[in-house]
Each structure stands twice: as structure tokens, then as C-alpha cells.
Length: 286
Image (cartoon, rainbow, N blue to C red; front, side):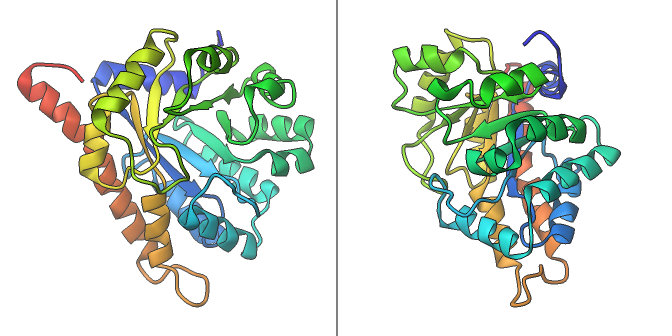
């Protein structure tokens, strides 16, 4: 894509800083709209470089129990696609630089109407989409219209993606590549550093797009390990688990719950800075 947007600017800034991106996932509306917005608003100050905002759906087949439960909490609290886009819209009133990528399934977008959704998403300030159940063969359904509208369409790659499939997946991919380091659902153990490094090198031979790695990254140490060999590390399940830990019987975060979640996010985000500091101390680069 020729036009430079927030995602491209963010990765360019990170390249100058010599470090990887810290990418966080939270479900929009979890555990309720008010407190979800408070978490979203605090993510950049906690060290998040790119936000993945989950679109709640009743049948999230690629997600583990934690993210499934987050989606159900959000839906029970009345979250809709309109409310999710409104969250982005209000976030943009305070922050016009941090990229936001909506992640989820095609059904809620289809029900909204593709043309109307893309129009509203662009107006709200959405930068990218990760739609886990739309294969490359269905690009005309959403991918191509999204790219035409100026929204990046980010693809998932896995350890089973062979070279033929990689070529097809890269055809309309933009923004960055999301490497799922394991075969399985969200929350599974993450892949070994050596295997992640080998995969990133294979992708880098085919594309200049940044490669971020997700699934199973749960600690600052693991974030730093992935940051050493990739362009970004994604944490989702661990953050969603932290939210769930703070939810009381009334469906709300307990007193201090938002601060606890954001403090945990900050501890994870320190992993990418830790790798940067180590590279500086040794005179090397990531």
C-alpha cells in the first residue's frame, strides 16, 4: 500500500529506536463498556505500541477459553459493533497516533454490512483488520474492499504455512504479518525462539512487511525473547486473564481493577524495552 498510515509510521519509529513493537489484545466491552474504555485509553501510556481490539462474537472458534469468556462478558454487557467503533472514535479524540487493529470474525461485519462497516471504521479511525475466518480465496468479500478504503488487511501465518500458501497469503496483505507461533487456539504455549526466528527469516525473504508473533506469550521474559527475533510481540490471553481476575459478581472490575490491569500491561511492555537496553549495552542491534 503506497499511502503511509499509523501502522507504517509506528514501525518506522520503532526501527529508529532499534526495538520491537509491543502489541496488546483486549476485547472491546470487556467486562463492560465504561471500564473497557478506561483500559483502552490507558494502554499507550502503559507501553503499548499497537492495540488489537477484539470484536465480540458468539462463536469464536479460534480462541481459547479466556478470550471466549471475555467475548461473552462483553456481549452480556451489551457490546455491539456500533459500540466498538464508538470506542475507537472516542479513543481517537485523545490519541491520533497509536494504531488500532480490529480482530475477530467475519460474521459481525457481514451483519453490519461490509460497505457501511468500512465507511464507519475509516471514519472512526481504525487502521487495520485481522479476520481469522476469511481465507485468501475470499479476498473479494472484505479484504479488497478494505484495502481500497485505506484499511490494512493483516494476515495470519502459522508453522504449517508452506511456500505456495505463503505466496497466496502475501498477495493482498498489508500493515504487518501476524505469525501464530503454534498450531492451536489462543492461550496455548508459544513456539520456541529458534523456530520463531527461522520462520521470520523465511517470511523476510518474501516480503518487507514487519512480522509480529503471538499466541502463548505471557511474561515479560517471553516478550523480550520474542522481541529479540521478531518485529513485535503480541500478548492477549494473559491480559484478558488479568481482567477476568478483577471482575466481581456484579460484572464490574473491582476497585483499582483498571489500574491493576494497566500495571500488568506495563510490566509486559517492559520486555521490548529490556531487549532494546540489552542491545544498546552490547553495542548491537535487535
